[in-house]
Structures are given as C-alpha cells and as structure tokens.
Length: 328
Ligand SMILES: O=C(O)CCC(=O)C(=O)O
Ligand SMILES: [Fe+2]
Image 1 (cartoon, rainbow, N blue to C red):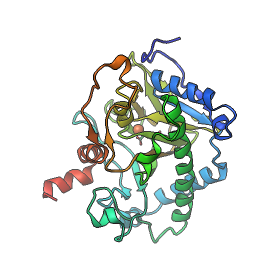
Image 2 (image 1 turned 180 degrees about the vertical axis):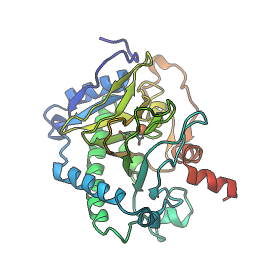
Image 3 (image 1 turned 90 degrees about the horizontal axis):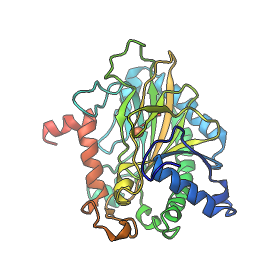
C-alpha cells in the first residue's frame, strides 16, 4: 500500500456508494472514500442513484447548445454572477499557458432580485440565463442540477463520516450552497498542438468537491506525485469525484486536491459536465477539529470561502479581468 499522501498509485479507485445510500455499508463506503481522498484526491463513484436518462439528457442538451450559432450563445454571455456562456479561449491559469481551449456554459442557484444576498450585493449571486433560441436547455439542465444536488448531499454525509466527524457535520455550511453546473465543450486539438495549449490546462479545483460526468471520448488526466499523468477514462455508470482546494485547506492538507488537465487530440468533439458543490458564501474555513493530527498547529489562517473563490475567479476568467481593468 502507498504511504499516506504519496500519490504513487496508478489507478483511480471506484467506490460504490449504494451501500451508504441504503445504509447497508456506511462504514465501508466512508473508509474507501477516506483512503481515496488521502492518497489520490480522486475517485469514481458508482451506485449514485442518478438515472442514466437524466445524464444523457444533459449531454444531449449540451451538444445542441454548443452547436447553436455563436450569436445565439452570445445572447447569454456570462454575467457578473458567473452564470451564462463563455466562448472558446475564455480563461487562462498562468501567463506561460495558452488560454484553455474549451467553451463553457454555467448555471447556479437561480437567484432573482428579491433574493437577500442579491439585494445585499453579495458577489457571485444572481440569476441564471437561458437562450431564447433553445427552450429545451433549461428543463434538461435544471433536472440535472437537481439530481446532482442530491448526489452532493450524499457526498457531504460520506465526507463527514470519512473524516470521523458527524455525518451531518458539513450540512450547516451548505444551507444556501453555491453549486454550479458547468457544460464544457472541447473541440478537437491538432496532434501538433502547442505544448502549452490544453483543453483545460493543469489546475486544481477551487472549492469543496467536484462531481464530473464525461462522455466516452476521453482526455481527462490526473497528476501523480512523481509528475506523471494517468488517464481518468470514461467508466460507464460512474461520476469522477475530486477533492478541491478549499476542502484540502479545511482538512489541514489531510485530503489532497490533485492537479488534472484535459488534452483532446482524439479528433472528436469532447463534452463533459462538472458539478461544483461548494458551501455558503460566508462560510469561515478553518482547520476541522481532529484534522490537525497530534495537535499540530493549523497550517492556514481562517478564510471566508466566498472571498477566496472570488479571488481565484478574478485571476482566471477573462470577463472578470476585463471588469477589474474597468475599475468595476
Ligand atoms: O472536462 C473535464 O473532464 C475536467 C473539467 C475540469 O477540470 C474543470 O472544469 O475544472
Ligand atoms: Fe478541474
């Protein structure tokens, strides 16, 4: 077995969470998830309970949306609440990289002008946007969003137990969560692609947990500690789950947030749909009791989740960088 925290493993484990959902094997599931979170930072989950037709419906809608004329997609250009469409090459992680070669459509909680956080001007809270040219997008994505929220709730409970906390430990932090469904389209990249041009460049996710559906095309890779990359291929009936930066920080680095990337030189269009499940904007993230093992001092000062996320978004997405230059 690998040493703790040493991602020397060649495969990403598959954990059937059905036994957690029906209560027949909660401890086994929690232990397997804990092991994966500590050693890999990635796992596949099977037995998640989402109907395949819901997943297929979301992919079908995604393909149809990205096939619309650019002008129609631009009617729902991303708003300041991070909801809507971003054209190809819309984001860059670091200056030495080319922009990420994908196009994206995002939805979150649909918050109108009467929502207290919208009224108070809390960043990244606001309405979804739907293209008039494609009425079928909203029902398909809303259905998927709701299904993934259920998966997210189960994952929260598993994580609580896996960290030897109460199963309900994380729930209060998710009373008004910040979930996002992100439709992604990766056009094929030429085999002669520049070395610093990726479908999505190596990065870690920002928040709590990501639950990803991908099509069968492939191209997602996960980094090992030794710098090598392993494929995270499509596995029917599963989602790919990864721990993100804020949860790594919350656990005092006990759990890993592992870099990953997409290169699509398959010659085919690739589609994926990550669901980012993150807590309430004002959540104060500080070392979870028991995660500072042997009583060592916490590694990080407390931080507010929303402030942290806003900072990360502002440094990645072109539409937010442009706003900052305008002084907005
Ligand atoms: O498309 C994928 O498989 C990965 C997407 C991803 O890493 C992200 O959106 O953060
Ligand atoms: Fe990611």
